[in-house]
Length: 440
Image (tube, rainbow, N blue to C red; front, top):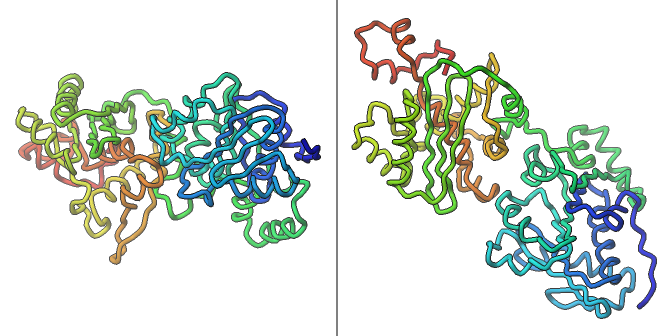
């Protein structure tokens, strides 16, 4: 075997010397992550027999993978002990082999071929969905196996950042590496980075320092506001109980019940695989057990069937049908009810006094994933759920259930006596949109 000197920057030494289960390297452009990962794996593959999986979220062809990078490094060092074919790379002496897969196309059955993997390298991990990670992590189960992760962060709530790096356990190494940590960074790249630092500090932080993008004007709800609400501890308000029900539309969606009293969202229940009758049964149970003032049910798709069953059971006084696509109550400001409810939720999050939000990282991701835009009349319009699902890997069911609790204002009996003449019917109060009431 030809002896070569592979130079790995010192900051990447743990790739070769430590036994952490997860090795998470992130940062900005030109930090040398991909080169260091490729060189380290090629070096380890020459020392002993390894099964190495090179993974990314979407791989439509080998051109989308790190296959070419590995081939280039093999050529650069003249590693003639590696044999390269159209779909894999093998070491002729140790028997080590590299395979390349896209996780989006894998399910729990297809991914079983990775059970014997020694090292899984996830490249461009900022694009990995929670669903992909939850399938992959338990599959890499061989004793001593490792998962190497390289990424340039995109957003505050990138799924793999939240799941692995935000609060690392004792088996996870998290290292930030930028262009100034890379001894092989070309001088031209350094000059470009310094120019960007002066001309556009915000771009510099994201592109060159690996900081997540500031949410700016594209996101309706910021991660900062959600995390602040997570940290609040409030006594249970006396406000009326409202339950939002987002009914699953497709097989991998979840039916979610969200419980809120005034300034506190204190409970979220999720269910998978329930049919229409089973969802109605669960809703009936929650109504009888908790006696909410209102339960708002999304009637898009199969949700209409759930609403019909509940109404037939005599629960029409409590259950209210809501269609995300229908005309907004304030139609001059919102393109549809969905945009209106989400904006009411946003106002609730940022207003004073502060609110308390049930801690759930999925809820954080759901709330912060939605992009906002405006129609030709200048009305608020949210990104389509299908687009969110493509990017997130699932529907934002928990956030939609919470948004449903803001479909209309709900008043308790005290509010009825204080703010409305006694002769008004309850439905008159419920259907009014009193801008002066700040309790929600």
